[in-house]
Image 1 (cartoon, rainbow, N blue to C red):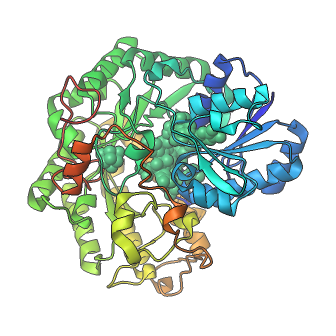
Image 2: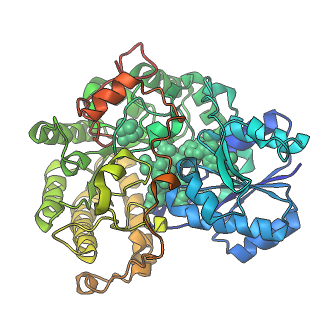
Image 3: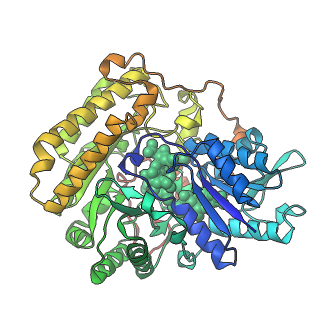
Amino acid sequence: MRILLLHPNYHSGGAEIAGNWPPAWVAYLAGYLKAAGYHDIVFIDAMTNHLSEEQVRAKIAELRPDVVGCTAITPSIYKAESLLRVAKDVNPAIVTVLGGIHGTFMYPQVLKEAPWIDVVVRGEGEKVFLNLVCAIDAGTWATDPDAVRGVAFKKDGKIVATPAEPPIADLDTIKPDWGILDWGKYIYIPMGVRVAIPNFARGCPFTCTFCSQWKFWRDYRVRDPVKVVDEIEALVRDHQVGFFILADEEPTIHRKKFVAFCEELIRRELPVLWGINTRVTDILRDEKLLPLFRKAGLIHVSLGTEAAAQLKLERFNKETTIAQNKRAIQLLRDAGIVAEAQFIVGLENETAETLEETYRMAADWQPDMANWAMYTPWPFSDLFQELGDKVEIFDFEKYNFVTPIIKPDALDRGELLDRVMNNYRRFYFKKALFSYPWLRDKAKRRYMLGCLKAFAKSGFQRTFYDLGRVGYWGPQTRKSVDFGFDATRERTTGGDSVASDESWVTVHGPKIEKRRRKGELTAALACGGGQEQLAEHDTRTPA
Ligand code: B12
Ligand code: SF4
């Protein structure tokens, strides 16, 4: 049986400006399938190779797969739907499969608008996809699809979702097949080396209302640090990877294992640098460990520093948090680690003044890098439900952190974009002239100048923030920018999304859920803002 995996050709000029990134999902799924005896797996990265649908069509016709699986996050859903239609057109006998976060929660809408998709794999993909492939292989899929857990499909005109497959308890049983990727393509521009995205943990014990990652993975699991380092060593040795980011939502949650991971990396002296996304409170907690992290190769930490102010949290003490943010940045810089502050902007209460305030904070805290992401209301997050009719745009293609989905009461979307660009211009102009070239730390200087190069490249190509597509050429065009929202895409009705599907049980037990709903957990803080910590002995939910 031949299985073809597709990564859709979706671009939006956010984090991807730093280079071409290898799709980790492909390696994890292919490794799991191959271990079970399914070796004929082919991958087409339409994103990295900028392939048109026609080019993918020709490849599908040539490869003659039995199963075609495509991934989709929310903004790439329409591209994924189209690619699967192409597969169905090429040969109606192909079983078309959609995986990833969007279909996991939006399968009723997806199966309605893309009836050529045979099956949606929900949540963690390895086990469910293997079971599905086995059922297809054995011929039982057509006759008894209900026997496969964790999938959704149409049967007799009705949408059916089978009970969820339990998350894989031991993540180390998944042996990724990194060899399936064409490594020469995945270059991290700031360092000019190959980049990888391994998983150290999956899931998150917290339950922030704007985030859906905790719902998606359902359970929080950390891998054996030594095995993760084995994987990294193989990536360095076999594929010449020189930089990696951990795919985790927040890898420092489990301090003990994270420290063990760093110690193992130090012991093996691997020629590799790496980056993570984490929370301010973890950096403060780990103040004394930062030199160890740096010694292990950690060079870049992104902190979700200011989402909290925008999200108007109960129990949110802004003064404390601002002081904490500043301190965390200072600590990282003192340890020789690049500190990146992430601001989330663009809620309905955003004004010119609040945007200016974020710039002032960035200027005051002096992170090495700053970015201003547009708040994006994932349709299956709790906050989306709370925002109600404040969300007017349902063109998911633009749900990408760079397009203003919510219109602030006091600003046009074009003005919002313009002020965000103004923040970027001022921040990086100063860094380029007065900071990066003069850094004493050689490794950091090289890294920062590399980041500037990536920025310059995307600015020149007009890909940064999709500026070319929307027609932004500076403040004079702020009134004329056109985000190109597709107005035919309308609000999903209750039945089209399963954000609160009772059958989709997570480990975030009823007690925690209740506290979160009552606002007793500082829930809506971004990765980086949360105050909670995981007890040292605990690998799952916070006490
Ligand atoms: C690394 C990363 C990137 C990288 C690389 C992406 C790539 N080429 O794969 C870069 C920097 C390029 C990037 C860019 C963007 N990203 Co990003 N990214 C991530 C990150 C940190 C890790 C993704 C990952 O590899 N996870 C590990 C793998 C194993 O998990 P997985 O992909 O979910 O796959 C599993 C299942 O979903 C399932 N599965 C997935 N696909 C399929 C397909 C089939 C057929 C089957 C059966 C199963 C299956 O099985 C897999 C194994 O269990 C996540 C956050 C996170 N912690 O997950 C955000 C995340 C995926 N990104 C996100 C976004 C929004 C973006 C951007 C739009 C932002 C921007 N403007 O730059 C772009 C879009 C780029 C694009 N075209 O895909 C959001 C998506 C949210 C949503 N609801 O859609 C996330 C979740 C971040 C967040 N917290 O909101 N991203
Ligand atoms: S800490 Fe919050 S924002 Fe970060 S992954 Fe966990 S639930 Fe999501």
